[in-house]
Image (tube, rainbow, N blue to C red; front, side):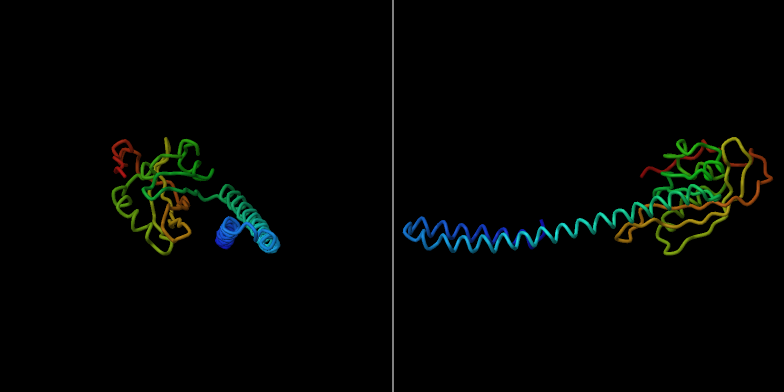
Amino acid sequence: MSDQGFLHAASMRARLASLERRLQHSPGDASRVAPECLRELEVAAARLEGLHENLRQRDAELRQLRGIVDSAEQRLGALVTMVDCGYLLTDLTGVIQEANPAASRILNISRKSLAGRPFVLFIASGRVELMGRLTILAEAGTPTDLELRLRPRERQMLNVRTRICAVRDGSGKAVGLQWLLTPDSVATAPLESAEPATTLEWPAV
């Protein structure tokens, strides 16, 4: 119920309580009070009907907006799935939440297996620096472009152009990071020169 509806209901309860007290103290007034009660009930019924119609219209508008949002999300999801660039959605600590098929191909690991893994595990060099910049990246008002060297699972290293931007909630607070990965070329350095992925200790959050 809306604030207006609560106020109206409270007003009606107070009025009915007043009429009940009058009848208790002056039973003989019942014949005079009854028509007054009927008139007030008619007014209350008309007001409640109006409130119900307003709520019905608001509900229809919300359903329409929900449909628009759902449709937009479906189109966006289809677009993310179709693009050739890798797309990752991570939390603010860099832990992967979602990945598109292209990101799965780039990192040579299934989308299901990517979920829950720190993206920094796939960084061949500069991990510490990137981890230290995550907060700065989340606070940035514009997308940030970086050149990262990735080490996919059981493949040669890749130079990847990466665009990072924050995901924000309705209040503008950063709640995650989006990563757009565009492979540049296969790195020529041997795998042994990269930092071992198993040596990374992800900081507690």
